[in-house]
Length: 474
Image (cartoon, rainbow, N blue to C red; front, side, top):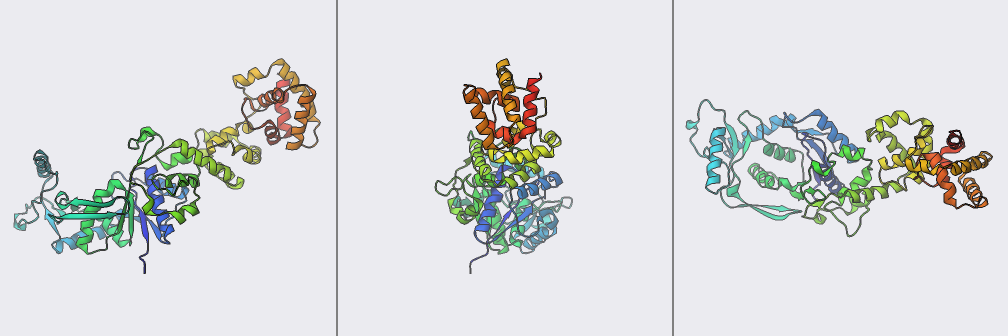
């Protein structure tokens, strides 16, 4: 019987959910779902000084927004500290670990000497075999693992391949600090074992940790999970991703107007591929996803490609879901809180009518709301300089004439508006643009908008005629 696949996403709540962490969560989620398994969530909050409730909330909110659900209750690592200490004590009692009385100053001197001699700056095992009778009475000891002194540790990684570490470079690392707090290295292994984690999928900055954690598994005679260490995400310039490259937190991508499904699609393609497929719905991602298709080279963040992918999803999303997402996230957009107060129920109804037109022109939700600006403008409109230049005396005279035609229109439909406007231009012996541009300026305050028939229809008869009339009475 095949082993049940159980993955985990284990962020440290010392900051928000960044884009690299989101991809790690996605890959764990996809692999678990692809194999009929489970993904667990563990908050590694052992760094009490840097862990914050705000960061925990942001991580959980980010995962929920990305629609990456996890199985079972969320595990908080700090709450399991007593279990971690029990494992350290077991190792100590079975001569698999030892008490170390080396002071911080002695440790620093030890490392400086090793560097000067060209050796790895690791703990030299001073207290590994010393007589306990030598222990100083005034120093609280740490507990260190007895790691192999010679030979090699081999990690068979699903992404990186066979990775070999010399055991002489793996020092007897600390399991319990002198104040009795467990280290990250110990806590992670105990939690992964107790949570029945079968596959550890994480960033390749943890690859050297795998060799050390392997020693704890062997000392405890526990099954070692499979490893898959993902290459990190780099910025567009190929350098390690940092704040100077732009948005890092998932909340920022939400505020920029990206759709969760689009971001999942884009993140999945950062380091994983399936032929030349670019647009891959989530159901298809689950069907196709496998660790063997993850590359070893760092992927580059490309906002142009992300916008392109998002544009595809935006054009395909249902109008009802799009409305829900617009209304629920508007307050997070730049200037969105003010818009929330400004936009009326009538405006929202017009925006909903306009969605089929707007979403075909937009790349993000923010872009879509900018495209919809002509809907929620208040009279009298403010005009761009180009729009103001369009409204010449001749143009205003033309608006007067077409306004009368529009006023008499009984059925305010796209077909009737198109027929009337084109007929007016033809009878006036004008090119269509000579009619459309003054209308566009009067109705939107600018020179760029959806098609003029769409603008007239979306605004409705009363609002359209009112905006035109404002220009006739200036």
